Length: 491
Image (cartoon, rainbow, N blue to C red):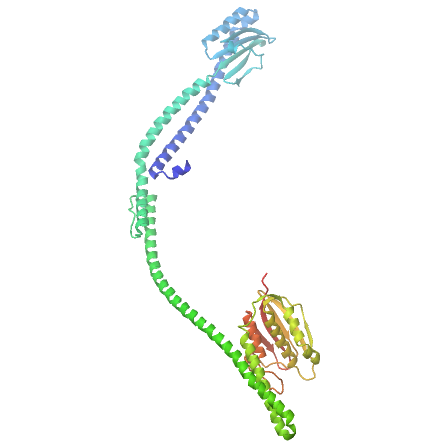
């Protein structure tokens, strides 16, 4: 029912609104009048019945005094002139029935006397009145009257129906004249709105018919159309500009994709070239080293001290060249041959690194301490290489005669763990903090500290592949602390 009302034309809704509100108001008013009249009528009937009881009591004094039942009955019979009184009775002073009257057998009931007053029972009013003479109680009168509520209700209903019919007829005529002043401007706005929807023409405007709230609505509607028209024009211009930008970005993405493919192909070729080159280069280097050692072994007595020194130079150079080739190949494979990052305990690669450095640790009597190592996202092989490089450097770059003291500390940094590898070594000057992470960059001669200068460069590349960063804080002769971050393990 409610859904049907929503779909009715606004003219019909306005008419129904007026009629329903008018009918409801009239109905409530009529109900109030009927209720008030019913209570007033009941009170009037009670007062009228009291008057009848007083008259009957005065006329019955003599009959009660002389015990004249016939006279008392005659007085009661006079009540037939009052059609609403259905029962009447006279009682003696000792509350015995003296005389009675009943309009019909249905009401032939005489209740025992009650204290003076009246009460309502069903559709009737019951009244008891004391008969006195010179202050002496001679008896009492009982009267019961029919309020005739049913007949009065029917009469009132007829009146209400007639009044409601007349009011609704007048309401229809009035609403037919008035609803046009409301619905016509609204229908004009609805017509323009429908045309805008169908034609997508925001230049249309609704005609302002009145200066009331509906007229203000028409003005607001037209202002909204103006705003939409301007915004639509701006959106079209922005859309054309955005489309041109999208085309440019698509072309740039295609070019980038092509470049990435070329880069991937180039990296694959470079890796293959590095592998083949290292293999092809190492083979003649091994031959040089082997034959030089064989030459020294078989013909040592034919060489003087300087000749033997030259032979040692040749062997050492070949070996260092082999080591450089191996380190360079290892550096190139950090980003291409790594395993998938997965949750691991940092204790695993740390322990593996200590096992690999067991001989160097025992020889140097190094002390390596640290707190509990957490779960991280990592490649266990590369993290082993990371710890191994940092710890071996800490052992190697310690002053002669000092015992290496190395401490590993970990702190929480939101999504990352911050690792700190602290040593008591020779330290690093501030000017070289960036240089030490560059491949083949050495701060000391090979005779002083052996190595190829690629270890820290590999560490930096490993950390960058793991999405972290690495740096150093140090002072000469006061040791160094290498910091690096690793992402926490996913839960």
